[in-house]
Length: 542
Image (cartoon, rainbow, N blue to C red; front, top):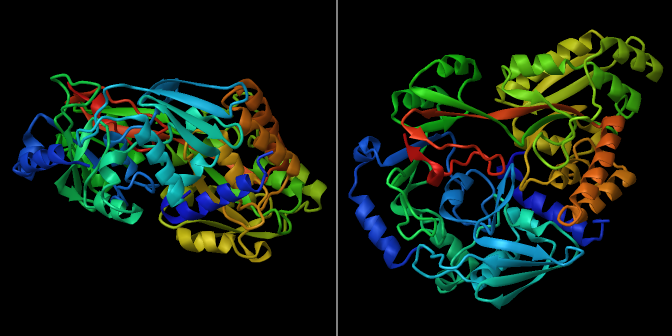
């Protein structure tokens, strides 16, 4: 999924289905910080041991926590905080210290951490939680759809806030979202004007968060560099071996980032050429961190167009994919063969899920059963132009299916063109579309609903799959995640088994997140729930 392109549509599609019943900145403190920091030169920042620099490949989009749905998460997750923090080991307290719900999961109460200060100097209270969530819901952009279950929010007292839901939902998980769940200083922001005025204030390089770092306005350039300074009054406290300044430096060239991290000019980066990782692992100046991500690559079959409207043909082609070879060749082993539609580590992933394995004899048998003993048809496969991994996968698939007598035309397209073609008349669209997906917050429903739930108007169900029994299973499962996770998991497994049987898509692989960091820092730990984020507060001088 390319969130930069599709944020508004994603919000509308989820909101529409749920609503239709288918779910069966600173004030004085900031000014002083900016004044002090602006005196430091860029050269000084590079040489001072109290600075950590993250070499990042893409420019920032927006600094508005209510609408940010793309790259700027790498800034916001260090400047703002959610009520709850997601970790692969479970949900942890963040701005809320505890929470509970009624029996059916329609009323959730959060107890807030006391003594938390915003960067403005104001204390955080329940009013700020209510205001922040309501602003995101009201604006209805980007990630706003995550709050769709919320009917109303009640401030019980300064440190207790209660959410009343329209239907059961796992609200603590929603409240941990990397997008759209950050708490802002309502007292300060509400004085600036309407939502548009507040957004303009944010995008001048200002913030109103509680996080360990604050944005330095005079050092904010979304295309080149973002400088963050530690917030002295951060509720978590500070130790002497943490970093006073954290810099996100935009460096699109992967080879340059690699050179800079090995020399220590930057301290951490990612998305380096996979071919270079073996030599980096042997470089004593850097360490390579490899962690499973919550991202998956799919190849969607056009189930509305012959011959792929025949389930046996789709099953045959699913058997004719050398999954392990693809992971070894394309990812150089930095990833795993997908076990169904949900990445490893999330609710909804099942190690024992029976999936397709490479078996050309079985593929030929199924094609003959479907009436195509010698293949004899042509398919068009589209992928995102410029994505080298997708290009390699496409070439492998083309070569394997040729052994079955099937001719594959590979057509690279930019994402906007590819998506437009896929959303047009399915009878005239591509036969196979390759695309990545990652969750807004780590729930299997985000995957299963968006890509496989029945749709009247095509958005991300780009295989045009429609199975009412599948829809009912996942729509019920999502309401049980927060109160009966075992039952939710059972329903998700039932739904995923339907997908494997019906084969509307090929589940290819889950790539690892691979970071390379300099020996001068320690404490880094990737959190797949917050994609591409480096939590600077966790880093220490080695």
